[in-house]
Image 1 (cartoon, rainbow, N blue to C red):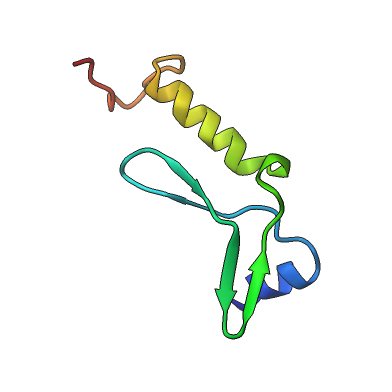
Image 2 (image 1 turned 90 degrees about the vertical axis):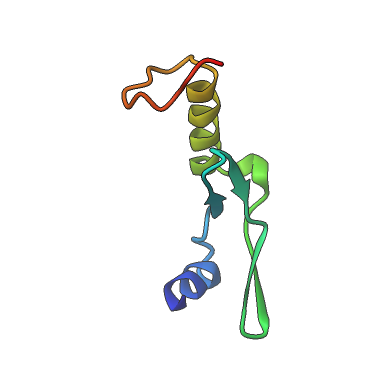
Length: 74
């Protein structure tokens, strides 16, 4: 956790998100640590989570090759 605090203090904390079995990306706006709130950059400025969200969306929509056989048409 200290590396995250250090990155936030230096303005280097660029992105944070949660990922789950529902194949979705949930952006994190702030991280509470001890008595501080580490605020992350605005969602529209983030690149990593946007790329992952786009990839997951394309994957679920069949626009990206399903190399692992995870998708099933119903």
